[in-house]
Image (cartoon, rainbow, N blue to C red; front, top):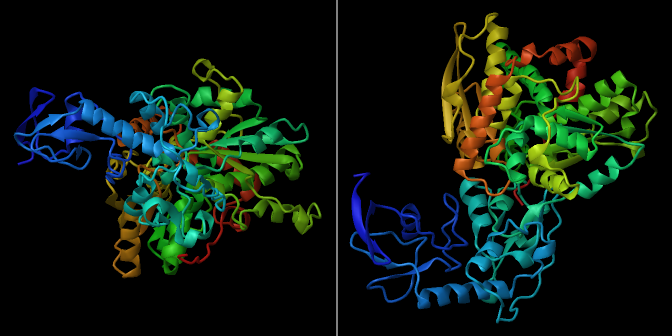
Length: 590
């Protein structure tokens, strides 16, 4: 019986509560917050920190409330001299091996350990350090591990194993030698890490953080010989406001644009422009595969964490990936070719900076094949290999951008509303919804349906692929041609669909995969915290902006039409193939 009630007593007061919840969750629902550190709803129930202990009548010892269920007739005390002392002692032992560098730590002011220390009133740490200081892991292009700040809560391990099924990190050693590490201490950059950054998103301290590139970006902004342009991913407009102290899910597109101009960028463009371009290329690729008996199902290739996942764990299925580059990489290629020619700018002077909700984008932009603009200009400008440059130079996360805004004194909340620059800032509602799981599928269907049938969809909102269900599927009728499609978010759910493909049992023609829970709006570079409630608020704002757009279909974007007329000629054409498409590589598991 789902709604069965039980009777409990908490701190001397009787309550009737829902059966089945832990003591921690039950107390939260009745308005009592029990302090905790290692516990994280829907992610980790490691019960390692013992901060959440309570007294239960009849129990011989204090009980860890995060893993103990509330039962009928239970009498609970959430605070007493013994409980308070146990919590303080447990936290003091954690603090003994933690560096006291809060003033210069990037999680200062947004650190659960720091907040808990203040809550429990700890003023000193009586215990000495018991562990040697491990060197930082800087092998990854996306993430940095700082072992000295690790409190062994196990959240990163849980999200990597249970949510993503990647298992890139785990506990190693015993007793005082216990640590979080990678396979044979090789480092994140040398194992099957997908760079998704969910570990950084759930870490309560700064033991895992994004690789900060803000100093390099500032240096180029201040360099008068550089033309520094910025592109902003769809999810940033519903994440940066939070990071700047506004309400959760705040839709701040116009403020974001004006703040970026104030920061010093020469042009402020929108990744949604190339999201629309991706739909044109990917939509026509899907149509071509269906008509010409190509490899099906075709799977979207926008999410770089997902790409690295399939390269590591399912290399036999690489032919199922769309050959399209992600919108980020398409933007870089177009900016350093089409836009450079249009304004007669030397492409070597252009610096492309991406603002992304995603740590994996840092790795993606440095993949060796992401330099198509260099090859485009190589003969025209007589470039040598030493002149080689990437299409996208830097990727900043939502959190990095927020720190830059704060560093330069930008009062984000009171910034005016401004529009993106043209032409690479013009986008449609289809580009907006790339931020949410199901968005790429919905955007693609809006265009593919009209291209195939020659008539508009009666209702362009594809509600069946919206929402946070792990795997969603639908059957679409394309003027008599029926195809089944699927949408998955998190690599755990992607694994299910990949196993179907490798077993020859996949019923789908088209599959969308997003690496992070909820899609890009739940990306590893977003504001902390990111919970399911916050993801929902961000999704609501994304669909709101889609509804507010005058144009909601990618193929109707006038700037995309001009790009094809003036430069690319046609989707899947020769120039599109050279600049906007790529291939992938097989990687080992270790």
